[in-house]
Length: 238
Image 1 (cartoon, rainbow, N blue to C red):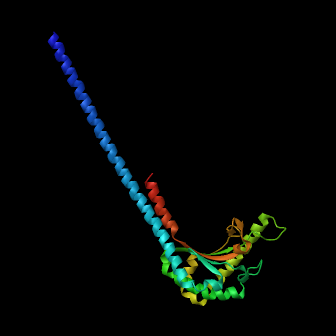
Image 2 (image 1 turned 60 degrees about the vertical axis):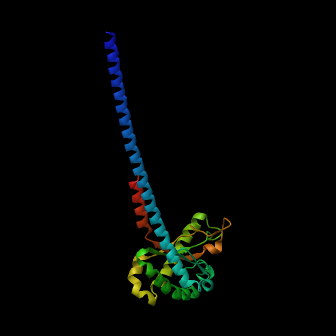
Image 3 (image 1 turned 120 degrees about the vertical axis):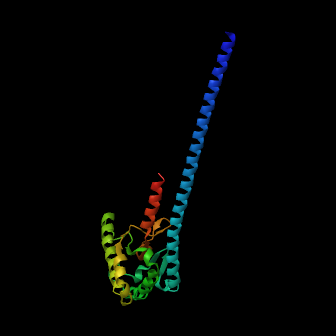
């Protein structure tokens, strides 16, 4: 009887040992599968991150290339036109030669400038035709209107004035003889926007009233298409 009990105890131990070995094997297998999945997800995230970085860099490179091309063309004209290039923005920043106060009619000096500027500007941008979504002509004002006007009235009056000014610039530019071969493309991409004083120029945190009164030609690349690619990559990563 004693030997039988000892034999049974040995069998029980072997059964428990086999079971523990089986559980350890299963646990090890699960761990290996889990680690493989983790490594796979990390690799996918790394690939997606690299793709997003590549798209972003491509977008920034396009903007930088356009900016450099504009600067190469107009660097000698910027001082006499009192203009500047900020990325893909060409800014006419001297209100004294643009319009009379409170008026939307182009001054003769500004007309002469635009006659020289716009055909050359379009020649530069045609090199990047496939990358350009919009060419925006933006009218900007200061926050002033008159001393009696409320802020709401000043905003609305300046919104109307800035829109009229932007449209007058567009009308003049689009009628330039030298750009008629590109007219149909310009119809698709040209916009006139009045922004009132929504984007003032600040100096030491305070509005610079004179500098805020300006006209800008802003190139918008097909960033939406690039952003959709990034959005798609991010959605796949969720």
